[in-house]
Length: 266
Ligand SMILES: NC(=O)c1ccc[n+]([C@@H]2O[C@H](COP(=O)([O-])OP(=O)(O)OC[C@H]3O[C@@H](n4cnc5c(N)ncnc54)[C@H](OP(=O)(O)O)[C@@H]3O)[C@@H](O)[C@H]2O)c1
Picture 1 (cartoon, rainbow, N blue to C red):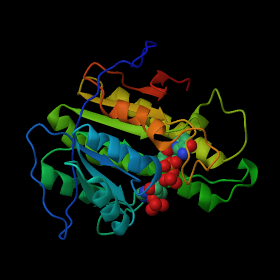
Picture 2: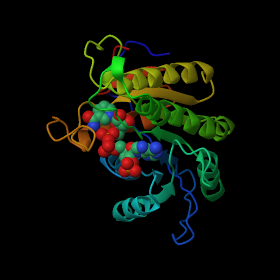
Picture 3: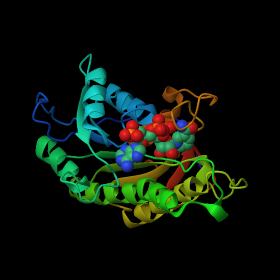
Picture 4: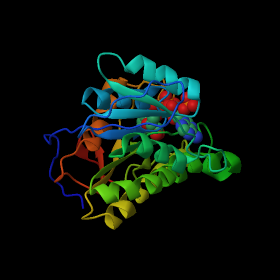
């Protein structure tokens, strides 16, 4: 499990993936090219994580709820030899014709592998208080931020286990740190990110020795739709720690929680 040493100087890796889109030109899979799936890729940190992983030579599936967003992002980020393909994925969708298992299945059909999963999709409950929180909103935040990430991990792990390699990054938040949880705002978001961190811990414990490393990342406070315009960090800075964890070497940490590539208190 996580140790106290800094991993800030660890090396980076690479990868690739996608789901079938009849109108999308097929791509030639390069031997050894890693395949990554990034959820919530329509904008903000997800889109930037796709971009940075593609820059590192991975074939990246940009998974979005809206197929049009996925195709737009893939088209925008596919320039200059990058491999970015669109994927359709609503992480709370368990009844539609394209649930998570089919998304992962399509990736495996197309690329024969899935090396990296970045559970980035996330929402907040905004301005409410825990004692009066709207139950439906609390449930939706939980479904997206925890259950959705859990479903994606469960769908990806069999292929990773068979390959003896995997990197799962749960994009969490400093607001999910119990030690730092001294404010009352966005209660469902805070509880969900603490839950996501717990998922990181139990998956990492289960997968010790399999070659699959599971970690939580806090991107910091980043200027996005969710983070708002006053945040101090740009998406390029916020994506750094998730991308670092997605490209860890085999002796990298697992079961950890990191901010700016340094261990963060739970
Ligand atoms: N920005 C910050 O300061 C900050 C700080 C700490 C942690 N984070 C975390 O970073 C991650 C990305 O946040 P962001 O700042 O980039 O926010 P954002 O710009 O609001 O992007 C959120 C992404 O999640 C997607 N999404 C929402 N519900 C989904 C669902 N059911 N299925 C699939 N995708 C869904 C959105 O897709 P649509 O376009 O379809 O809505 C969008 O692509 C989140 O997990 C967030 O909690 C952000």
